[in-house]
Image 1 (cartoon, rainbow, N blue to C red):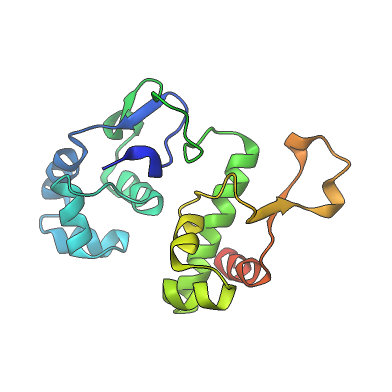
Image 2 (image 1 turned 90 degrees about the vertical axis):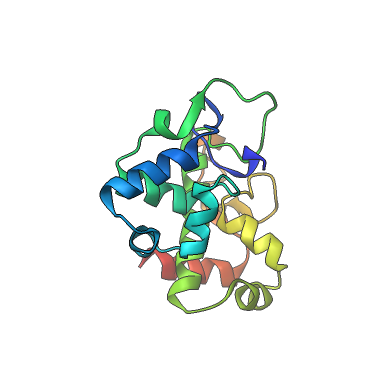
Length: 178
């Protein structure tokens, strides 16, 4: 398993190797059965089991929900330090990165609110399922999925708003923010 798919804040190098053990311990204390926690955070019991057994890392939205529901903070989840290699997937805490993550999360929420599967939404957007999955996880920092709002082109780069180029994804994001 690679942690490069996860969005970690600056100062954290990787998920703690015992993350699943800690999630299991807290889940047992606060929720009892896996199904109760899985229902609370909106994932399948099987996905939670894979996280607890260390066979999978949580996706960003799942991680956010786990941290919120189980009262976890970054030191409970990730190891302090610098990643050995820079990754375009790591969260760097800048305003532009916040915008990117917000847009990508809104796409996922919009897709789910319309009841679309990942494959169906990808087909409607003219993308591969894998590409849409990466977008929803916020892993589109260096792709051509995003561009800058045309009216902001005169502003300094760090002040320019980002937008989704794909009209269908923009509609999904709009639905996800509503």
